[in-house]
Image (tube, rainbow, N blue to C red; front, side, top):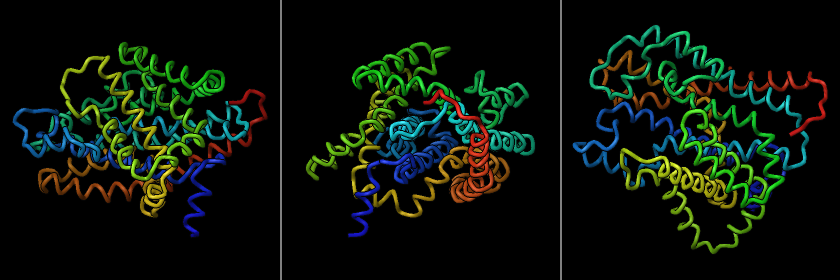
Length: 387
């Protein structure tokens, strides 16, 4: 009875605090990114779709099993979650000035990110030259050609980070788009308040199409759809939760199956030369899947019980550090021990090592960075321009 009442009182977001279930969902997605990059080290898995790959590998790649290592999909889920969580204070009536928002967001994302990038650069200097036989082209391409230009691009979050990220940690591309969306967040919130939700969705779809068609200067537009969808979910969460709960329980499994199918739609019928229009449609499907996953997480008592299980709560709490550090751990361990210990065994060992490092990165880097951002904003003079 107590658990049921706790579920009912917490499942609809009525305060600006982040729900544990959403942090836990982000944590599970971070784990899939970790598994994704660890599996990319095997030459039978990467490049994708090799004709002579073992049947088990093909099954793992091009079936619902891909759910456990869907890396790109997890990043899109991160963006939708960010749109949801960042919009909650404004939706719940808390006035936040733009300067304070940017400072908190910058310290929250940039400080842990640049610390890990710097450690990765040092590790590259120390052990990156050690060759490991039998690794994939993805692994061999990591930690190559490190230079000061790449490091400066990381510090400023500019330039071709898709190229320079291989010198440090390969996840940094997404953080640039996270920061760009944060800077544009007042505009996104204005759109969500000024236009009807079908028009906002249409705008997001068009921006996503433009970003996919023109991967140069318009590429950031590709991901604004996800942030807009997250804002809409937060704004209409009560109604959406009520709709989901009005469905008979027998429909919950099909809805979950639909979400999973859309989430991994890029791998069902995969082929190596997808057109920009195909990539656009896949982005739309993955974004819809992410939205369904969030509604299920907020609406289902079963999902609530799972996502508030203490180990998963912990993973959710350290999810950003997991995202930042997992490739650093893997590259160091494999470069140092890859010619002595079987790689698959090293990768298994990397999982607890990553969780341990992430725990202390959260305690020693993330939390101080968040406190710093809060202390800086408390010293700022009051401003009239708000989100």
